[in-house]
Image (cartoon, rainbow, N blue to C red; front, side, top):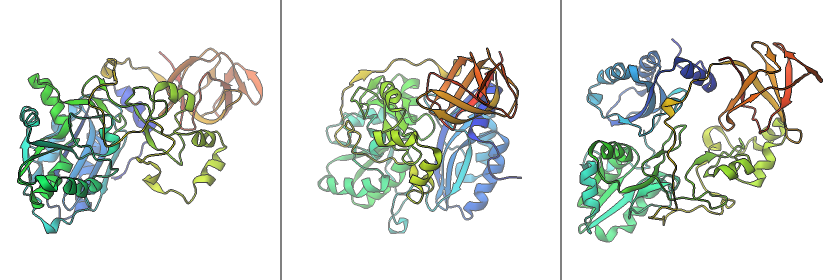
Length: 452
């Protein structure tokens, strides 16, 4: 059996839409001694691939850290694959506040040195001597205690769009950076204060709480299950949310709303906004916040330099980034001087705006479509797209859908098409067809014919 993905993300998205089944987005982790992470990884891939489970999972000698998407009908079967292992019996699965069928489009299980890059030497302290777990109600109560110091152990791009009121939000890009900073900052409060910490799903605080107890802090607490589980308990118990804004998540959604408060700004114009995106330039891919207006004007780019680059021929774009970045390093979560309204560290406690209620993504109408081909070029000045037709004919008057990660889903009626420089009524398989589009397309875009 193949232990890797055989479908592209686009092909998987089509299969998910065609299946029309509700999927759940969930996460879980467990610290445990795993003797053979490679075998463990392969066994998980075999079991989960059969259940159409997708996600990003890290395994190591110290345990497992997983963010996943599974068909709702396979939830119990999925739990059974976890129960095979003693250390995952009865494990808590943190379900997302907002489910999205496309939150993950591949099953990626990687063997790592650690399931969270914390920079700690686990042999120097007792990693099992962790802080007290607090449920949502208990967490709210301890936050009201004047002797409490609450610390956000996430990164600047996470806390910027949402955080607990009065929390210390370190201006860091990695978890490992925050540990010595907070240790130094709170040196004089080891015995007289409650050190209360939280993160997205709880995994970072498991290690951080043990580390700070080793550093001499007497009263250490952590939010059980992180922000994700906190939000779930708020709904179940009707509790007040002391978290404001949006919870950043590490899947295609890039965030799920906890409250309607927007506490961050578009990094380019300053308008209240909390929607993250990655720069369109493949040699940059900087993670930043961008409003719809700037997204349209800047074509999803973080700077005018990147905007110029994406309009270069593809061969020139590849030449520019050759040797500068490798692998996942092009997906940067740092900062840029071009982002005039980027804020970190001291963050607002009150809303800049109120978010509009989105439509329930689970109720969206499924569009029946047939894949025709893929984008090959976009002529900027003429606003003309070129596609290679690989499957079925395309006719003038057809209703088409152009879809891509940045372009989104754009529908239009094809009024006329050009093949080999001449206007025609039909493009056949093997033809390269061009036609006008009122929006910019990307080379990752796919062309579909809507048939219902």
